[in-house]
Image 1: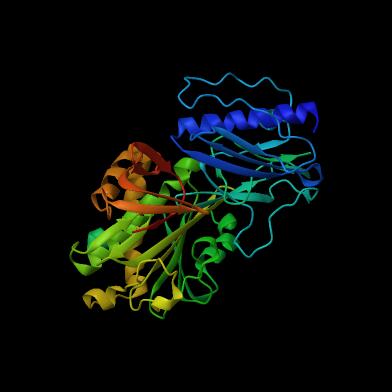
Image 2: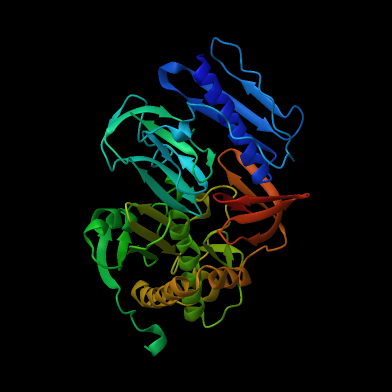
Length: 163
Length: 247
């Protein structure tokens, strides 16, 4: 695991902790698939221990100090590899639940490495039984899929990186 | 037909003998339409529910999709879920001539005598919003064809003994939708939210919301200003944007 990727993971976990606090949730779990780069499985919980990180890749899981759940603010993560600031990042335009395929038995809209065209559906974000298709803002290749099917997302959550 | 049930100005009306699903038809023709339009199918061979669930539609039931082009951010567009459920509820009450027994289940199911009478599913893609509506007018699908924990399906005919033609129902629901949509555009979500809550089933009672593999059980406190289902779980207030709700 590179240093920049570790920083990205730390930033991501901090963002999860913030989301947990802001929404009065007790636990959130995210699994991310980086294609050939490995996987990350994070569970952030307000019950002790506050943060559990299980990274099933070769390197040891990064030790992360969780912000206290009642802390008034979390310092902005200093990182150059924050997926949200990546120029190819597609972020969620709304709060909701992500679906990677049209229906549970359908093939996924996209896979890492796939060529996509501007306007193609990347995934769906559902809120209130409204299925919102998220479209590719440009033509390119899917570099990363940052969310798992069924994941809860906030406004601005990075979903996909297009290179 | 009185003035309250005249076809709304500015909305197209398309009647199909048979189609796979009015939602699928909306996806096909929606981008080419220049104005909102209702698509009604007398027979729907492949009705769709949420996340791949089939919407079983016995003959004589209502299956229609409204294609529209709302402005605003995706969160505001999704609030048409509540606009649609109020319109369907109002049409049902208009047909029944009474409001007793009707209720709404978050976000947009219409209930009658505790059973599911109508389901609504919306799809938003590239500026086109399709509002798919199914109402059991004449017959409820067999109970074994719905999810085990779901409410029993009911029909207007079975519960209150009235037979309503889909095209007659379409006029009522289209008129009600147009009125609520106008209200939403001029006054925002608050009046819609208030009206919706006044018909909410199980408000103040313990319900369960399932999202993916996560279930949250709590007291149904309210629907918030962005349409979230708000449950109070102990001292924790949980706002849920997407879920299946179980009583």
